[in-house]
Image (cartoon, rainbow, N blue to C red; front, top):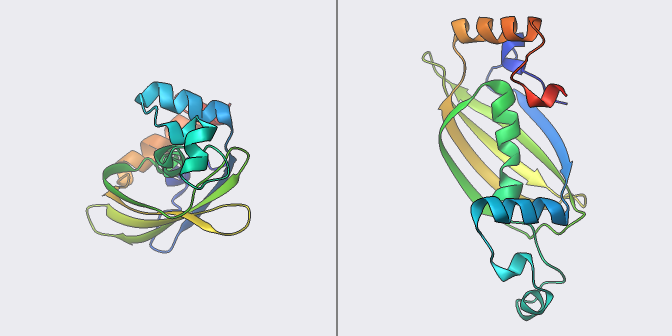
Length: 157
């Protein structure tokens, strides 16, 4: 589990962070209800068959949101994200998200590349992220939060 890496000073160009998640139908139903995206490609087998797919697929942004787990644990404040959806992700697929910091400037403005692959090693999503990493004072605050048990971090549960 990725946990508050910024507090540990692990942020530098070429730093890479990796998480894995298996998606299920409940994830897609919850995401659809939250976003009100009820495209039948996520729910209806007849529609899916007409589109030439073997089964309903997960929402692309649901899968792409894996980079939010990484970014959230880093304390990254995103200012932009760009996604390319390359292959469908089906219920039961296990996806690995690998985020690599490309650059960090003196103001802690950073860019990163993200590649998400399925259990066959096929690229399903690529993304680019830009925004702000925690500065030195914020890194110290994150460390203090961790020392207190990190009460705002749901990933610690």
